[in-house]
Image (cartoon, rainbow, N blue to C red; front, side, top):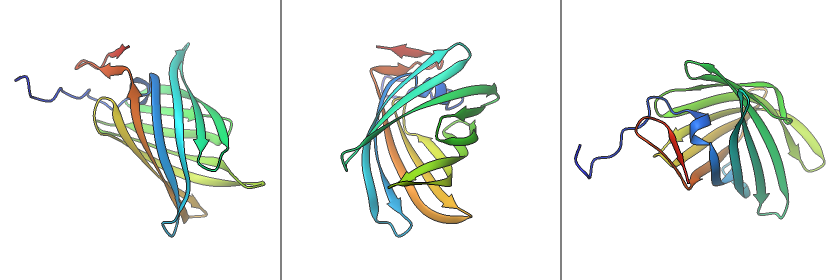
Length: 168
Protein backbone atom coordinates (compact mmCIF):
# COMPACT_ATOMS: atom_id res chain seq x y z
CA UNK A 1 0.00 0.00 0.00
CA UNK A 2 1.39 3.37 -0.95
CA UNK A 3 1.34 6.26 1.47
CA UNK A 4 -1.46 7.97 -0.50
CA UNK A 5 -3.75 4.93 -0.68
CA UNK A 6 -6.90 5.10 1.45
CA UNK A 7 -7.10 2.91 4.53
CA UNK A 8 -9.24 -0.20 4.22
CA UNK A 9 -12.71 0.18 5.72
CA UNK A 10 -13.80 -2.36 8.33
CA UNK A 11 -15.77 -5.31 6.93
CA UNK A 12 -19.04 -4.07 8.40
CA UNK A 13 -20.23 -0.54 9.23
CA UNK A 14 -20.92 -1.22 12.91
CA UNK A 15 -23.10 1.36 14.68
CA UNK A 16 -21.48 0.61 18.06
CA UNK A 17 -17.96 1.15 16.72
CA UNK A 18 -18.80 4.26 14.75
CA UNK A 19 -20.72 5.99 17.57
CA UNK A 20 -18.38 4.95 20.41
CA UNK A 21 -16.99 8.02 22.14
CA UNK A 22 -18.08 11.56 21.28
CA UNK A 23 -19.82 12.50 18.04
CA UNK A 24 -21.20 15.82 16.86
CA UNK A 25 -23.96 15.98 14.27
CA UNK A 26 -26.11 18.58 12.59
CA UNK A 27 -29.17 18.24 10.46
CA UNK A 28 -32.51 19.35 9.11
CA UNK A 29 -36.10 18.15 9.03
CA UNK A 30 -37.98 18.74 5.77
CA UNK A 31 -41.71 18.37 5.30
CA UNK A 32 -43.12 16.36 2.36
CA UNK A 33 -42.99 19.47 0.15
CA UNK A 34 -39.26 20.04 0.82
CA UNK A 35 -39.66 23.01 3.16
CA UNK A 36 -37.20 23.01 6.07
CA UNK A 37 -39.17 22.69 9.32
CA UNK A 38 -36.24 22.49 11.75
CA UNK A 39 -32.46 22.81 11.97
CA UNK A 40 -30.55 21.24 14.82
CA UNK A 41 -27.23 20.13 16.24
CA UNK A 42 -26.69 16.94 18.23
CA UNK A 43 -24.05 16.04 20.80
CA UNK A 44 -23.70 12.28 21.26
CA UNK A 45 -21.84 10.06 23.66
CA UNK A 46 -21.70 6.32 22.98
CA UNK A 47 -20.39 3.76 25.47
CA UNK A 48 -20.84 0.17 26.62
CA UNK A 49 -22.84 -0.67 29.73
CA UNK A 50 -22.54 -4.42 30.22
CA UNK A 51 -23.72 -6.12 27.00
CA UNK A 52 -25.63 -3.03 25.83
CA UNK A 53 -24.33 -0.08 23.86
CA UNK A 54 -25.73 3.20 25.20
CA UNK A 55 -26.05 6.31 23.04
CA UNK A 56 -26.90 9.54 24.86
CA UNK A 57 -28.09 12.31 22.53
CA UNK A 58 -28.74 16.01 23.17
CA UNK A 59 -30.54 17.85 20.37
CA UNK A 60 -30.49 21.67 20.24
CA UNK A 61 -32.96 23.15 17.74
CA UNK A 62 -32.71 26.50 15.98
CA UNK A 63 -36.11 27.40 17.48
CA UNK A 64 -34.44 27.56 20.91
CA UNK A 65 -35.53 24.31 22.55
CA UNK A 66 -33.62 21.10 23.25
CA UNK A 67 -34.34 17.46 23.96
CA UNK A 68 -32.38 14.49 25.21
CA UNK A 69 -32.69 10.84 24.29
CA UNK A 70 -30.97 7.65 25.40
CA UNK A 71 -30.82 4.73 22.98
CA UNK A 72 -29.97 1.21 24.18
CA UNK A 73 -28.53 -0.90 21.34
CA UNK A 74 -28.41 -4.70 21.60
CA UNK A 75 -26.16 -6.42 19.01
CA UNK A 76 -27.43 -9.80 17.77
CA UNK A 77 -24.55 -10.88 15.51
CA UNK A 78 -24.28 -10.97 11.75
CA UNK A 79 -24.73 -7.20 11.55
CA UNK A 80 -28.21 -7.30 13.11
CA UNK A 81 -29.20 -5.28 16.17
CA UNK A 82 -32.21 -3.92 18.00
CA UNK A 83 -32.52 -0.59 19.77
CA UNK A 84 -34.93 1.13 22.14
CA UNK A 85 -35.44 4.56 23.66
CA UNK A 86 -38.30 6.19 25.58
CA UNK A 87 -39.79 7.70 22.40
CA UNK A 88 -39.57 4.44 20.44
CA UNK A 89 -42.76 2.34 20.22
CA UNK A 90 -41.54 -1.25 20.57
CA UNK A 91 -38.05 -1.93 19.26
CA UNK A 92 -36.11 -0.61 16.32
CA UNK A 93 -34.81 -3.36 14.04
CA UNK A 94 -31.43 -2.65 12.48
CA UNK A 95 -28.92 -4.22 10.14
CA UNK A 96 -25.51 -3.20 8.88
CA UNK A 97 -23.39 -4.15 5.90
CA UNK A 98 -20.12 -2.84 4.48
CA UNK A 99 -21.12 0.78 3.97
CA UNK A 100 -24.65 1.29 5.34
CA UNK A 101 -26.74 0.84 8.44
CA UNK A 102 -30.52 0.56 8.08
CA UNK A 103 -33.00 0.81 10.92
CA UNK A 104 -36.82 0.87 10.99
CA UNK A 105 -38.98 1.77 13.97
CA UNK A 106 -42.12 3.47 15.21
CA UNK A 107 -41.55 6.70 17.12
CA UNK A 108 -43.56 9.18 19.21
CA UNK A 109 -42.92 12.47 17.45
CA UNK A 110 -43.69 15.60 19.46
CA UNK A 111 -45.55 18.25 17.43
CA UNK A 112 -46.38 21.37 19.42
CA UNK A 113 -48.70 20.19 22.22
CA UNK A 114 -49.44 16.71 20.83
CA UNK A 115 -47.66 13.47 19.93
CA UNK A 116 -47.96 11.57 16.68
CA UNK A 117 -46.74 7.98 16.27
CA UNK A 118 -44.84 7.80 12.98
CA UNK A 119 -42.57 5.32 11.25
CA UNK A 120 -38.90 6.09 10.62
CA UNK A 121 -36.83 4.30 7.99
CA UNK A 122 -33.22 5.31 8.64
CA UNK A 123 -30.29 4.75 6.31
CA UNK A 124 -26.85 5.76 7.56
CA UNK A 125 -24.11 5.90 4.92
CA UNK A 126 -20.43 5.67 5.86
CA UNK A 127 -18.44 8.44 4.19
CA UNK A 128 -15.13 7.72 5.95
CA UNK A 129 -13.76 6.60 9.29
CA UNK A 130 -15.11 9.68 11.08
CA UNK A 131 -18.05 10.86 8.96
CA UNK A 132 -21.46 9.54 7.97
CA UNK A 133 -24.75 10.80 6.53
CA UNK A 134 -28.16 9.71 7.83
CA UNK A 135 -31.26 9.98 5.63
CA UNK A 136 -34.56 9.01 7.20
CA UNK A 137 -38.02 8.90 5.69
CA UNK A 138 -40.87 9.71 8.10
CA UNK A 139 -44.27 8.16 7.28
CA UNK A 140 -47.71 7.75 8.84
CA UNK A 141 -50.15 5.14 7.45
CA UNK A 142 -47.82 4.77 4.47
CA UNK A 143 -47.96 8.48 3.62
CA UNK A 144 -44.58 10.26 3.47
CA UNK A 145 -44.61 13.16 5.94
CA UNK A 146 -41.03 14.28 5.53
CA UNK A 147 -37.31 13.59 5.48
CA UNK A 148 -34.58 13.87 8.09
CA UNK A 149 -30.93 14.49 7.15
CA UNK A 150 -28.14 14.25 9.72
CA UNK A 151 -24.39 14.64 9.14
CA UNK A 152 -22.11 12.92 11.70
CA UNK A 153 -18.52 13.83 12.64
CA UNK A 154 -16.75 11.76 15.27
CA UNK A 155 -14.62 13.71 17.73
CA UNK A 156 -11.05 12.63 18.46
CA UNK A 157 -11.42 9.01 17.45
CA UNK A 158 -10.50 6.93 14.46
CA UNK A 159 -10.98 3.33 13.41
CA UNK A 160 -7.84 1.34 12.66
CA UNK A 161 -7.71 -0.93 9.63
CA UNK A 162 -8.65 -3.88 11.84
CA UNK A 163 -11.84 -2.13 13.07
CA UNK A 164 -10.62 -1.35 16.59
CA UNK A 165 -11.27 2.09 18.03
CA UNK A 166 -8.46 4.48 18.88
CA UNK A 167 -10.11 6.98 21.25
CA UNK A 168 -8.30 10.22 21.89
